Length: 493
Ligand SMILES: *[C@@H]1O[C@H](CO)[C@@H](O)[C@H](O)[C@H]1NC(C)=O
Ligand SMILES: *[C@@H]1O[C@H](CO)[C@@H](O)[C@H](O)[C@H]1NC(C)=O
Ligand SMILES: *[C@@H]1O[C@H](CO)[C@@H](O)[C@H](O)[C@H]1NC(C)=O
Ligand SMILES: *[C@@H]1O[C@H](CO)[C@@H](O)[C@H](O)[C@H]1NC(C)=O
Image 1 (cartoon, rainbow, N blue to C red):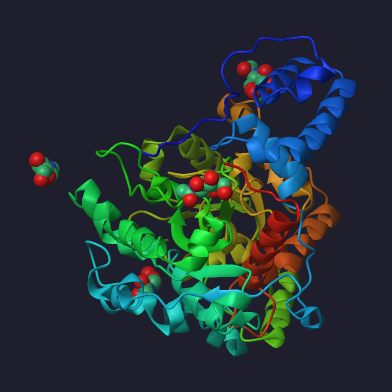
Image 2: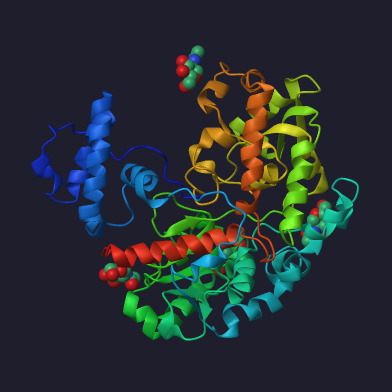
């Protein structure tokens, strides 16, 4: 269903002798460099190649073709593009918008407000109106009473996973660096609800034309805008509230819309809940969870709550057990979980769409577990990663693309400090027992990892504006990027 390009390195290798003169030759030299990279075992080579890559990147970045060759861009991403954001819940009021100012387009209502007003038919099954309520947070989660502290109930909602377009739009209208004059802006926000607009066409027998219509219209509209024409889109950004693969249809009959591939879209920075790690313009932002703190007090009360809980289970797995029959790996995890002693692993069966808005059973399970298993689902990421971490549970990953290559701005820089990575092949062939691996961590190590998770909660949740949260981290990241693009003349054809 999904056009996922694998992790395989580009094509076959033709090892060549490394020559400095080749470096500045042409973009192909990147590939030969990479082939060296794959073939040389020695550390020295690795160091040398990384060093050269950095130098090369500075010199040749503007000549890179898009999409970037996988191995190259994933390594450059790690080297250059995603400086880890320091975990700090404090709003930095002192900076006076030194990284830039934002202009928000006042779009024709068909691109946002009309879509919300049609919330009754945003998907083929049911009305989304209650899910879109409260600024996109959804209905208040009153049924969590008894599970979470009484005074925190008002900060919990049944939030749908596909609402970032609404959340970002609401917040950016109130941003302290928003300007009403485009002339003084360095960043331009396009409040088009691309994901909500395409939602109802995804599962019906719709034509490619229907699925692309809104996106074509917005690009047409943009193409007449002075500031869009000025930059070719390089200082424009948009939130697309679904995974990137929903917007990357390359053949008419395939899944999704072709929005990201349409002419005019290429240079626009896109905030997505799952990015294509090999596309510079895709930025991964956290899935929304149900926690929307009103301020510092809510955050610290919640952090204390999850820090001091007694956790009765070593690990847990929340997933669709029916899907397990189609997906080998999930079935293996389920087996391992079910075969563990009662106190070790807890399962939540998410058959149907029971887990889609984070039910109380799921939150409870995460609150009772030290670790949560996070295999890939239909795509590499799942909302469950954030449901798990917001509950102070430590995520266990089996694919690096599930989090490490997705949310670099929002999660701690050292993966092993807040998560566990287990080789899925060793689990599949029966040589690794998840229970045994997780039990090896001492109480102190578990406590430290959990503390890193809890510290980063403010960075990956969406609050109401009183506290620096995922929205602020994302906007800071975008402004920093646009500034660097200008300073380094960092634009390529
Ligand atoms: C979210 O899930 C709960 C529990 O299944 C349900 O009661 C509630 O109506 C759902 N809310 C929305 C907005 O879908
Ligand atoms: C979908 O629509 C196309 C063209 O409108 C039609 O040929 C096809 O039979 C339809 N498929 C289904 C499953 O309804
Ligand atoms: C993207 O930017 C490059 C470099 O500025 C420009 O040549 C190209 O036409 C732009 N693409 C689109 C679709 O605007
Ligand atoms: C199982 O998989 C791991 C990881 O890929 C590998 O190192 C190991 O040799 C495999 N063992 C067997 C018995 O296949």
